[in-house]
Amino acid sequence: MSVSAGLLRDLRIYGGGQGIWVDKATTGSVSPDGSGVAVGLLHTGEYCNDLSPDGAIYRYRRTARPYSRDVQEARAVKNAGLLGLPVFVVTTAGPAGSLRDVRVGWVEDWDDAGMAFLIAFGTIRRPMPCVAQDPGRLFSPVEPPGDRLATAPRRTPSEARFRFGVFRRFGRQCAVCDMAVPELLDIIRLRPAPSEAPDDPANGLVLCALHKRAYELGLFTIDPVTLHITIPSDGPNAAELAISRTELRGASCQGVDEEPRTCVARHA
Image 1 (cartoon, rainbow, N blue to C red):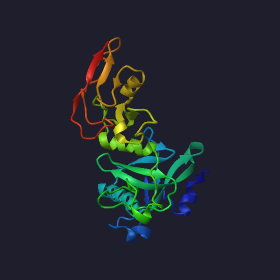
Image 2: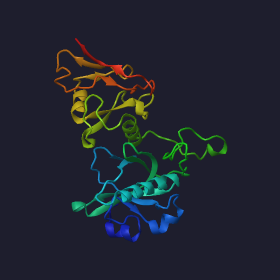
Image 3: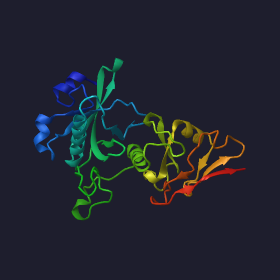
């Protein structure tokens, strides 16, 4: 159900006028570093596929305000994950964006290099705060032992988690060219779901809009195990397809630490 922005302000879910709403007067004293805890995140949907039914990728804000303010707000989002507290993800709705939709989310992980948070939607039975050895991770990658097993939240397949993991692993640059504009990058699955590891970032690769379209049209293929790029001899060649990178690093589902491979070939 869509609600008014005024109602969100009254409920102190979102203050408006900024991407990250931090009620520092209320949460400053409970946060580990005094930055407060993020309460509401305005998700504008400006990046392709960053918002899905199961979660969202939320980008660090870079504004015209002092840099220290942006850093402090990012810390407040991290504090929500470290403390196992929910955040409200706000999106616009209604005529001319006059209304707001709100979803409950959990800060599951973050990527400082890629400047992005992973937000998981829905309820969990018992939030598990992040730990120092694995900062930013709300859900344990393996089931805890003993009496915690029955109540531990289980990781289910998630498109948002998959996309976040692929971008964090490979960075925000096309795998076969030098395009690095975030708005023009997307994800492909090397092995289509369902596979033995549909949610594994090793099953994905970053491509720009041009090369994703070329891949979908079969103008080139990528072997999911060897990572060899194959270009049919009866179609455009690598230069015509603007494929300028001839090595891919460790994208195979077999492992994450493989050496670079020379991978462009022409097949009859």
